[in-house]
Amino acid sequence: MPFCFYSQENDLGNWLIYIGSKKLEKGFDIHNEVQYRNYNTIGDLEQLLLRTGIGYNLTENNNNVLLGYGYILSKNYIIDTDKKNKVEEHRIFQQFSTKQNIGKVGIIHRYRLEERFVEDDFKMRFRYFLGIKIPLQNKENRINSFYLSAYNEIFLNTKASVFDRNRVYGGLGYQFLKDLRFELGYMNQIFNTSSRDQINLIAFVNF
Image (cartoon, rainbow, N blue to C red):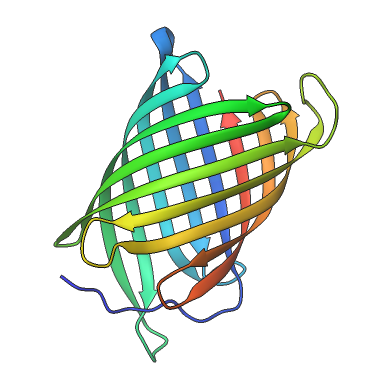
């Protein structure tokens, strides 16, 4: 079932993001995530994303495999109107992430395969994420310190139009506690024929 809807052409959107994780016994962990995406600063919902999953550490803190589920509610503007169409998606995904350090710079690679049930349509997509984290202060435990964060993530479909989108992000973060940090950043999302800019406010919580 094709979907021919377009985002409203605002100059700047806003994503409010919560990402949490909890360590369990024997190397397992739970991932949970909420993303509230707006076409403008706030109040014009573009997408609500709820994601959860259970992971397993192949090695301590470096290599993790995860099986997850996501629910996505999108409200897309219909072309040349101010009306929206609601689209619901259920998503199953598998991912492998690996971390490394080069000096004080932290690097993460994440490989994700998604099975997407979008209304009556089924799609599959591959995503590759490369992120870096650079501390700005020379603190051994990094608590109460600033850092820079950046990533690039490419999305590839398994059907005819292989390129789906690419996200480029840069932000400034603050590590309040060992298990709590916040980031404020700018992201450009590139599609086949257009692009959009977003301000991202992200909370990372480990508990």
